[in-house]
Length: 167
Length: 147
Image 1: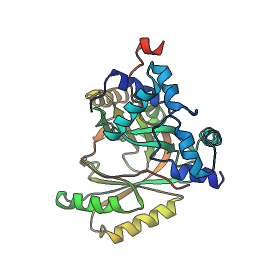
Image 2: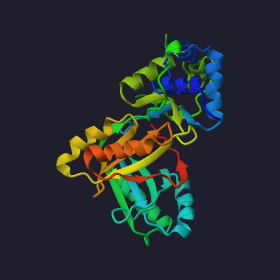
Image 3: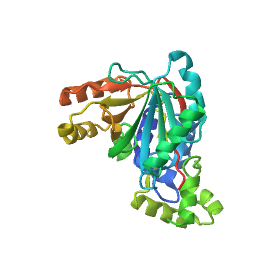
Image 4: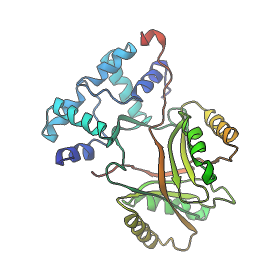
C-alpha cells in the first residue's frame, strides 16, 4: 500500500491522537474534508497493510509504576544471534527485542532487549533469570538502565494538511 | 486509578475498533456507557498515564525510516545537547543511560533519506558523533503494560 496525499494528511491529524468524542472518525473527517466512511476505510486499509502496527491507548509506563527500564544487550556470534533473538523475543519478560549492528570500538553488542519493571532490583533479577534460562553467561553483556527521560513522544509523522482541506 | 481504569488500560492497548462509534462499542464489556468511558479516558490522559490514543506506526511500511542512535556526551554538556536533539520533531524518545554511550534516542522519519540528514545535522550542531544502529532483525515488539 502506497500512501496518497489524503492518507498523509490523515496520518498528520492522527498524530494528535484520536479525538475523544463519540464519533471520532467523523470529527477527523471534518478537519480534512473527508466523510466518516472514507476515514474509516483508509484507517482500516492502513491497519490491514501493517502501516498501523496497533491502534489504541499508548501508556506512559513510568506513570503506571514501571519506574525501571533497562536496555539489556549482548554480543552474540552472527551464526546464533537470530536463534537466540527469537527465543528471547518469546520470553514474556521481554518487551522489545531487536538485532542491531555493533559499532566498534565503543559498542560490541548486537542483540538488544528492553526489560521494564517496577523497580531496579526486579529488573536485575529478571535479567539474571533470562541469562540462566537461555545460557547467555558466555556472551559479553551490558545492562543500561535509563537515568533520565528527556523526551517520550510518539514519532511525529504526517505532512501539513493541504490548505483546501484545512479551510 | 480504580479497577475500571485498570481494565481500560489493560484492554485498550491494541485492537481498538474502527467503526462509527468505537467508544460505545468497547464500553459495554467494561460495564460503562460510551460517554462514561470517554470521561475516564480523558481523566487518565490528564493524569499523564495515557500519552495518546491512536495508532502506533510501522515507519518502514509507511515508506520512512526508524533507527536507534547513541552518543557519548560529556556530563557538562548534557542539557545543551539534549535540547538540540529534542528540538528535532523526528526524535521520538530520548533517554540518558548508564554507559559511556550515555544518550540514546529514536529517530523516526516518514520520508526516505531524511534520517541521514537528521543525524548529520545533530552531529554538526553538537560536534559529537552519532552512532546509528538501525534494526537488522525484529524479534518482538510488544510494548504493553499491565496496570
